[in-house]
Image 1 (cartoon, one colour):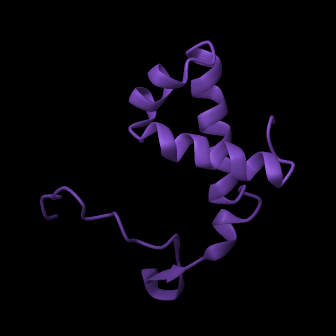
Image 2 (cartoon, one colour):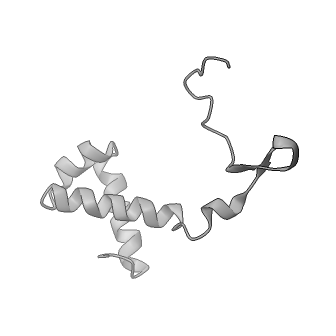
Image 3 (cartoon, helix red, strand yellow):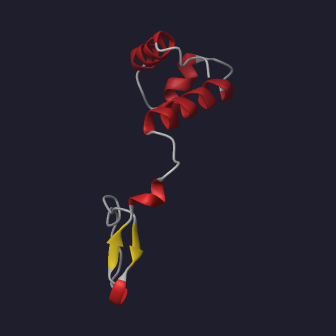
Length: 84
C-alpha cells in the first residue's frame, strides 16, 4: 500500500471491481445525480438563505466576486430557474 498524496483521487472516474479484480469505469454510479449547474445553483440559494439575502456576505462565503453572483442570478432569472 502506498501513501496517498493530496490530489491523487481528483481526476478518478467512478469505478467498480470487474473480472479478475480489475477496476472498470462505471458511469451508472452517477445516474440520477443533478447536473452540476443545478448543484451550484442550489448551493448559492442555500448560502443566500443562510446570509439573509446579504449578497456582500454571500460572495465572501462563496468565494466569488459580487458581479459574478449578480450575473449568475440575472442569467438564471432569464432562464426561469430563479428563485428555486
